[in-house]
Length: 460
Image (tube, rainbow, N blue to C red; front, side):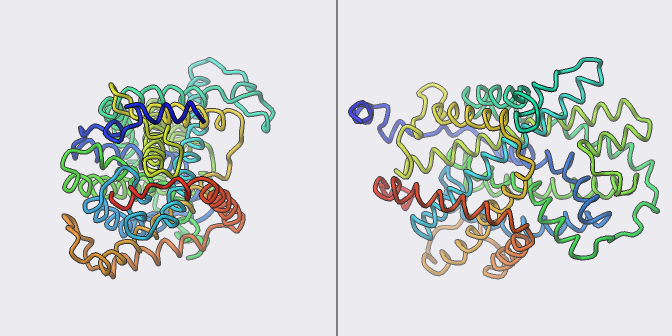
């Protein structure tokens, strides 16, 4: 404790040193959003959800999930432009709904970004192993599976997390440039898939269109919602954005609009070139193209999938570090998490610590049900943001709002209802795990956060 007090007295922990560098443009943010949104959803979940939930009507699942995300995205854009801060929904909740609600949302976001990065890194490992096998090499099974699956450790999953942690530590602009190059690769892969798939569409594959009924469509939407959650990572970059009042709304809405169109088009074509019953595989897009005899295209799609999953891990880890940063700066978590490196202007300690924890989880634990657990935390955050818009319109009507959610309170209410509807359709075991996570969070808050809070979040 004496050491911590001495550190706290040094300039290292002074508020002026806990400031992030503003360097991101609107195009950086749009690419950041695409990097987070286009990943496991399009390359993995599309096939799984079509085969087990919705059939060819997976297109409607993406439309439904897209509508829910759009209402939430508009609310995010308003609060990001008017309140700002690095903590995304956590910061907005603190400013409008109070400290306890803010803590719960921040705790939810830690779940979303942390386990999201972990689960995607495991998926990344599987895709990389497929590519390595295709070129004639093989990684021993004991280094591809965790102990619960009969192996020793998932080394590729651990390796990519550690590598991306190092890139994040270099600086936000360097991370954004790396993300932009990765996004370009996966957009090329998607364009190649569309160009090939459109030549092989057989309308017979769309019949029956809704084999699992409307319930299947909704269940599919609740599952593929995982594909959309990345746009809220854009709002965690507010403090590092040039002219955030203008550029953050552009980044959020622009990236979501582009990705929604891509998801709908790819899912429509994927179920048109093969029966939905064949899509419950690890890499449905690449395998389907391979079965059509297009080996080169399948290789390009696999490379795009690896690139897509890489950027998702990067952005999730970025968002996680900024949530920790914001909560620590407000006193709800230890002050060490808010330390900004003087040269890179990044919260280097929490990037390193969270990267290590995620790497260990990815290497040693099976996370087969993480997508649904991540979804419920995200949906709860979205509902809070939508409610925050309504609440602040009444309590702070004179607050400067460079961007306003249209048709308020109608759109925020629709966001609350649509996200709540998707939450209800998640499995009971997901709710149980979510409640346990919240209970742990409340214990941490009442044992540490409540007594150390400094009230800075109210001023964000």
